[in-house]
Amino acid sequence: MKAITMRIQKFSRPGVILLATVVVIITTMVVANATQSLTTPNAAFISYSLASGANSAPITPATSKSVLVMGCCTTSNDESVGQVSMLHIPSNYIEWVGVESYNGSPSTITSGISFVATTHIVFIDYAHRVDIQMASIDTIRVHNADSSTKAGNVTLIW
Image 1 (cartoon, rainbow, N blue to C red):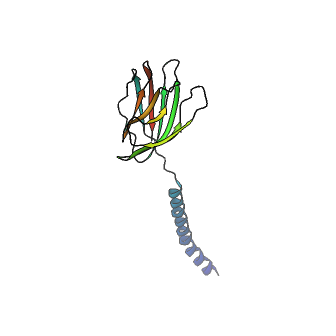
Image 2: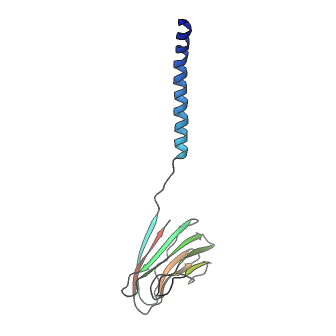
Image 3: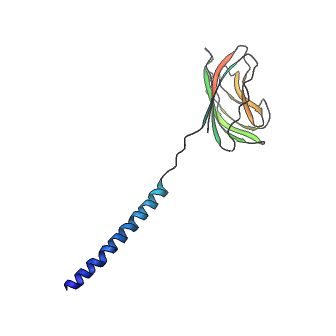
């Protein structure tokens, strides 16, 4: 009887080690598959100060991925903000949907798709005279249609 008990104990020790190894391997595989990969977003910040009728330099949004475009006017008595989510398909078009700046009445949704320069995308000032618009099939710009100089910034996050 002692011989049988010792034999079971000798066989069970390698079995326990093997079982523990299998459990560790399976746990590691489950944890590795369950981890979430987070990436730090990219961002671009562009300041502008535009005389009446002037345009900013062209801004090229990231291609083939969603881009959050936020713009604001910081000029006194004309402060406001507008934003759109944008998709830039290179050499084809830019598509967007978002919210126009507040101007005393409820803000409205802006949306569209374009490949034509000067197409309005979103107003970013209170008076609705400063907007982000198409500069070309692949770029956007800030345009000041007001009679005075306007300043602010545009942020792109992708």
